[in-house]
Length: 272
Image (cartoon, rainbow, N blue to C red; front, side, top):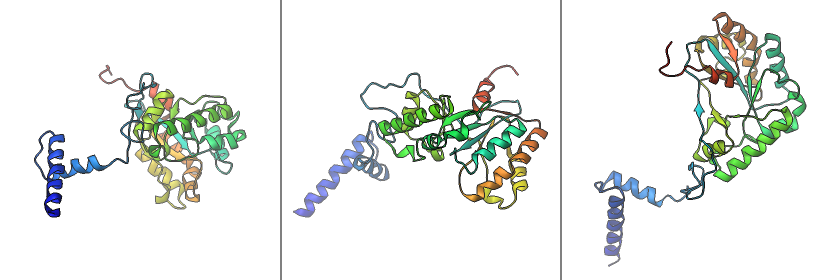
C-alpha cells in the first residue's frame, strides 16, 4: 500500500507540474517545473533576484539604465578605476593623470573613501566619482533593502569625502541582481559596467607590453576598467599607464569621463 501511495504522490506532482507548465508534456519540462516549485530559497519579491518589492509601492522614479560602453564614431575612451581610494596606489594614479592631463572616473568604495578622504580631497578636479558599494561585498547576494542601505551608506561617505554626490554605480565584479537594479533606481543612478578590462596577469613584469595590448584593443566608445587597489601584479598596468595614454593619443583618441562619454554617444538612427 505504501508503494501505491508513493506512486500516487509522484503522479500528482507530475500532473501539477504539467498544469502549471500550460499542459507541457511530462518529462524534462515537468521535472524542471517541479524543481522550480520546490525551490523556495529565492523570495518572489524583494530578494536578491527580484527587481521589485512584490506588491509594495516601487519607489524607483523613472527606472535605471545599464551601460557597457557607447556607440559612437568619435575616437573617445573613458578610463575608469575601481576599488579605491588606498594610500599605496591612488596617489600614483592621480599624479600620472595630472601629469598627462587625463580625466578619469573613479568608482570608490565608501568605507575606504571615509577612511582615506585626505587622498582624494581637493584632487578630483576634472575627474568624476562613482559608487562601488560600501565595503566591496557582493550586492547581487543582498535583498533589496540591504542593497539599498549599503549603497546609500556609501553614497553619503563618498559625498562627504569628495564634496561631489556620485551619480554612477558600478557593482563589485559587475554582479547584477534584481535588488541591485531596484536600489540603483531608487538612488537615481546609472549602472556602468565596462567594455574592456586591463589584463595584468597576462603581462607579468611587462608594463609596455600590457600597454600595447590595451591600446590595440580600444575601440571608439570604450569604457576601460583598471584598479588603483589590489594585488601587486596590478602595478603592471599602472606603471604602463603613461605608455597607454600616449599610445591611445597617437591613435587619435580623446580621454573623457564616463558621463561625458554618455553625453556624446551617437543617437541610433541619427544622421551621420
